[in-house]
Length: 307
Image 1 (tube, rainbow, N blue to C red):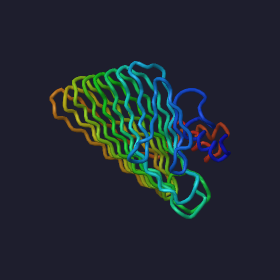
Image 2: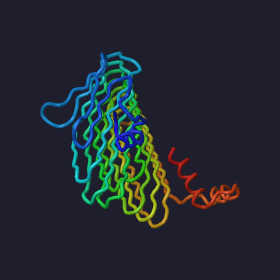
Image 3: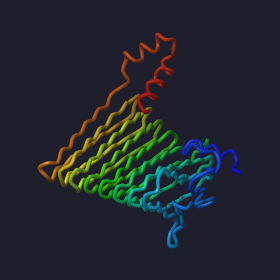
Image 4: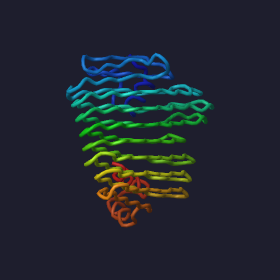
């Protein structure tokens, strides 16, 4: 049975409140694995030489779902894990990850996850990672994920990266390499407030003929928070990539969007778009006429923008 604090964090980051009734899972709390289950087609094993797990999905297995949430409930915890995902040829799997930090103390709590994905020929992966912080302490809540994706021929990967709230500092580093016919979609959604900082660095290499990538970032910065989004798409073959960065800036916040595109092949087609602006006054006025206060109207607009 989960205590109330643990259940609440799991609901916020993984849409579960206890151990999943079906499928494979691994739950990590305060630097240690507390519960784990493998299935016939999904094997989860702890690493022998360092903290973390290996997740192996059998070739051609279908409709698999794996939960691997991490929670920190104590102040002063510094947790580093190395997770490797081996997705067999033709497999179809959804992986729900994420980290929630509850810090009611004065020391910093931090989780750094290094995830590597080796996705086999024709496999399909959906990966959802949510970050969330809470607690009334003065200690920091820091999350620094590193993600490396190797996409085999005709493999498909969709990654949804969400920072819900309460994370004081985050540095996200993402690298992906795509082979022939591979397709990658990365969607980042985050909101910062107070003195929070968030930086996302990406390098997407399209190395095979027919490879395609779509990178979408949507963010909202409030108060005096600071954001930097730095995606780089590199076309090394006949390929297509689209990078889109949209941000809403409020109060005294700072946002930098630094998209970079590079082509090393004459048939590489790479596009980037970037926009930063305040909330549209016409939208605010319309919602105000429906009876909402200004703060309620702002909340509705932001919620819709980040969906």
